[in-house]
View (tube, helix red, strand yellow):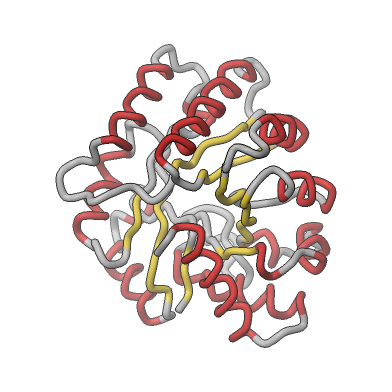
Length: 262
C-alpha cells in the first residue's frame, strides 16, 4: 500500500476528472491521501471530498503561509483553524494534522513577521491537540531552522513537506523533534540536487508525496500531477537508495502510519 502524504486533489484542477483520478489511485495501490488545507477559500472543497471518500481521504487543517500575505484578516483565519480543530464540521470525524503551515518568502519578503507569527501560533495548536504539523518551506530554510529550534524539546512532530534543502538542514530539523521529510516529484528531475541528499537520508525518515496538481514527477513532468504518480517517486527513491521498491513502499508507508496514527 502506498500513501500520498500531501495531495490537493480537492482543487479545481481535478473538477473535470476527479473520480477517474481517484480510480487511478486505487489501481496503483495508493490507498490513502492526506489532504493539507490552504485557507478558507478551499476548506469547503476539502470537506466535501473527505465526506464523499471517508475511507481514503484524511483531511488536515491549517493556514498556508502565502495566504497570510496581503490578508488583513489572517488572525481571524487562524481562529477559524483553531475552531475547526476543536469542532470539525459535520461529516468530518477529526483532522489528522495541522497543515499546511510554514514560511514562504519566494513571492515577497514583506510579510516575514506575519508569517512567522502565524506559523508559531499553529505549532502551538498542534502541541495543544497532539497533532503533527505539515510544514511548507520555500526560500526560508535558515529561518525555518531557527523557528523550529525554538520549539525543540516541546514534543513537536510532523513532516517537512517537499523537503529541498541540504544535509545540514536535515540534521538540524531532525534534532528539533519527531520529524519526517516529504519527498516528491523534484527528486525525479534531471540533475536534481535533492536526489543527492536523499541518497544520504535515512529511509526511516522519509515519506512519499505528490503535492498534486503541482511538482509532477518524471515521466509526466509538464503535465498536471496526480496522487497515483506517487509510485514514480517510490521507484526513484528505491533507485537512489539501491534497495528494492518493496522496501521503500513498506518503510515509507509505516512511517506515515506512525506519524498520523493511521
